[in-house]
Structure formats: C-alpha cells, structure tokens
Length: 433
Image: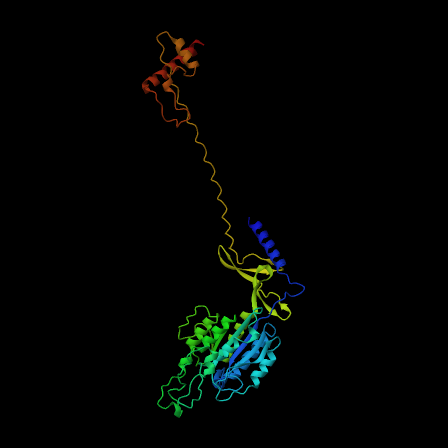
C-alpha cells in the first residue's frame, strides 16, 4: 500500500510539473498602475534617525523610492503626485510625472530636484480627491492603486484679513464636497501670530477627517489606497480610518485605535523602504504553482508574467510529526524525516526438552493360587503353569501406575502359605524323579 501511495504521489507531482512547465513565450499580463501621492510639506525637511546618524525625511523618501524601482522596475507603471502643488503653501497637489511604463528614473529625478520651501503645508484631503479624478488611474481595464504617504496631519493656515487664519478656502470646500465650509482656525496654542491673539486654538481639527474623504473618493472611483505614515507626528487615528476606507487595512485593524493598527507606520528610512516595497510586491505579484505543485509567486513584467518563483521544499506531516518534502526533477520526495524503524525483536528462546516419560509401574504380582484341597494337587499344578492366573481380578496391580498400590484384600499370611505349598510340591516332584 505504501509503495502504491508513493507511486501515486510521484505521478501527481510529475503531472503538476507538466502543467506549470515554462512556456516558450511569457504569458501576457497587464502591469498594474501605481500613483505615488507623497507629502512634500515643510515638515519633511525634519531630521530622522538613520543608523548611527540622521537624515531628512525627504532624503529618506528619495532613497526608498529608488530602492523600490530597482527591485520592481517594470513590474508596474508608476506615476507621481506631490502635495502641496507647485505653488506651495496650501495648493492642491498635482501629478508631476504622468503614469506609464519606464517612469522610474523620471520620478527619481523629480524627487531629487524638488526644493521644499518652509511654508509648504499639508492639503492631503484635497490632493487625494484630485487624484480620484486623474484619468491615469481611473481606467477600469487596468489594476489601479494609490500609495499615500504623509508625516503629519491635514493642516492649512490660510491668511484671513478679517480674523484668524482659516483651514480651508471656499474652493477647497467645493472640491471636497463639504458644505457648509468649516470655519475653524489654524491657530496653535503656542502660536505667536497676532491674528491668533485671543482666539481659540482650533489647530484645524475641523478638517482632520479630510484625508479619509479623499480616500473614499478614490475608492468610489475603483482605486484602493495604501496608507504609509512616516515619523513620530502622524495623525494615527485619521490614518487608521483612511486605510480602512481605502480597502487596504492590515489584519487586526482597529480604526479607532490611538496606535497604528490599520496602516504601515515607518519611523526610520529602512522601515519606509520596507513599507513601500511590501506594498508594491503585494500589488505586482500573484500566487502560482511551481514544480511539484509547490506554491510560489510570479511577477508581472513588461514582457509578461515571469517564471513562477517557488521553493524546492514544502512542509509535510507524518504520523511522527512535522517534516519536509523536496522536489527533485519534478518529483516530490517522501516526507523526511519519516518515522524511525522499530527495533529488531529478540530471538525466541529454544523450547525446553520434553521430560522423559515416567517408567511404567511394575505390574502387581498376581495373587497366589488358592491352596488345593487335600488330594487336589492337579489344581495347584495348573495354577503354577498359568503363572498365577488363578488370582482374583481385583488382585491385579495398577497397570502402568506407580507400582505401589494393590487392591488385594488377601493377608500376607495367606500369601506366605501359598509359597510354602509351592515349595513342598517342588520337593515332592524332585523325589519322584
């Protein structure tokens, strides 16, 4: 049975290998489209730990994006939007590199060449709404995605000649489909702006949820949004809810948590690189069947799907515990280590020699013939010649027994009398002869 099972497994594995054998031409695929919506507010010039030293968050963004393009240069078509827009301050972000194939180098050079002024603010919600209307990622024939990265809160401080600076213009409210337009101010508790003197320190909390509204607009356009927070000053609750609204929440997401639960939070350049790379990898790869039917992944490239990248081993289970199977030349080997062999049984002991049968007991001596009546010697002679056959039946010994018991009731005296008579008879015969 075990041999048949091994043959069946080998046959199935060989068939699986044939089914996934590389084709002469790569299978066509449509590379996904990814729009990077990146925060270019003034706070991105702040320092962040980088190994033994520090670097600016903006430099870290440049390095992370370059690393992703190096790892997945043709796996997707990339585009770039930064916010605020070219006019700075609170202007809505614009697409600076149109989405398309082979745009990695253009995006890298754009990020490197940007100069961030000190008054750039964070109109994240308005920019995400603008992205939802960008034709480059709204064609339903493509797989479209947005990666939204920010280091802070939704915030704009817009000068107001009649009072404290506001957080949004009427144009912003129109773009966000918000009515009535919020009237909270952008004053902070530590503000030295004379216009904030005697005013409530609203800090633009009235527009805090605008990034969520922007992500919802993208989702309505059929575009999932991945969210990445960078640094120590992100609006965690808003980003949690944005990731949930974007359809990309992490497992175990709690949108009401005050700690990162639904999105990827990076606190170092390395973590930022890993976060962006993990998102792109998830978008540009799919599961496939490698040799021996072992599951792997393949990546969409400009030339089509590449070869299925599957390991040569897979976990398995035996009656004795976990093991590993190895695929060799398209055939899946047995689960190793298998159960250990049982120990060899000891040699059976030799049977003891049969005991000697006991010697048959000697037959009891036949009872002596009865004494002859006077003158009746003939009867006595017959008794002698018959070998004591005249004894009673109950005088016989136990045949084959121990030879120690008789059932005769004759007394020893009678027996001796018989012997004496026999001796006398022999004496008489001797005289006659």
